[in-house]
Each structure stands twice: as C-alpha cells, then as structure tokens.
Length: 110
Image 1 (tube, rainbow, N blue to C red):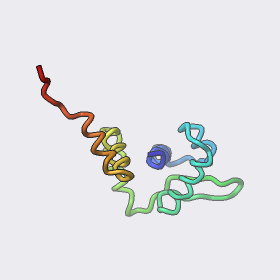
Image 2: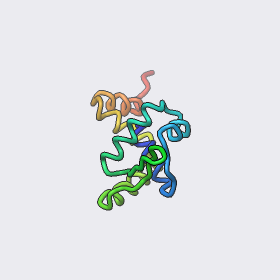
Image 3: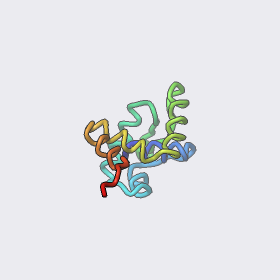
Image 4: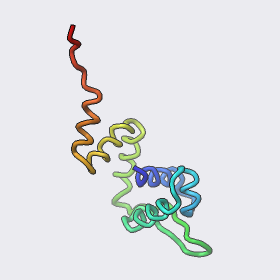
C-alpha cells in the first residue's frame, strides 16, 4: 500500500524532484522504507533519478505505463478501500475473504 501511495503522490507532482526523506515526511512513512520504494519504482520504469547534488526522484513513467497509471489513479480516488483490499488479498486470499465478509448482510434471528 505504501508503494502505491508513494507512486500516486509523485504522480500528482510530476514537475517536482523528491528525495526519500521528503517523501517519507510528507507521507508519514519510515525513511528507509521510502528510499526502498523509490528505488523499486525507478527500477519498474515509473520514476527517474539524478544523483547530483543528492539523489532525487521524479515521476517520469515509461510511455506504455502512463494510461494504466492514470486509470489506476482514478480507481484509487473513487474506490480506495477496494484497492486496499485487493492489495491485501495478494498477500493472503483469506484477507480478502475476511474483508468482504465484514460487509455481508445476514438475517437477524428473533
């Protein structure tokens, strides 16, 4: 979930360059985690970086990813909890089942 938050945060600010500390502070996450996420997003083709004067990242997705990322951002804005549940389900199929069961309506027994 933090990966998605970082990606969408940078997507909303494509003109800016960010270091791991600034991203971590803005999103309220651990700085080491932010650095790891930024590195992974760059390796995945979502960001570019420059090392001078310090390591800075910028949202510059590969052209083949732009449409999918725009669509993802729309879905996330409208259905944040559903996206969170789907991400949780990737870790544990039981997690999605438990999440969906929380919204199941049952008949009251009298």
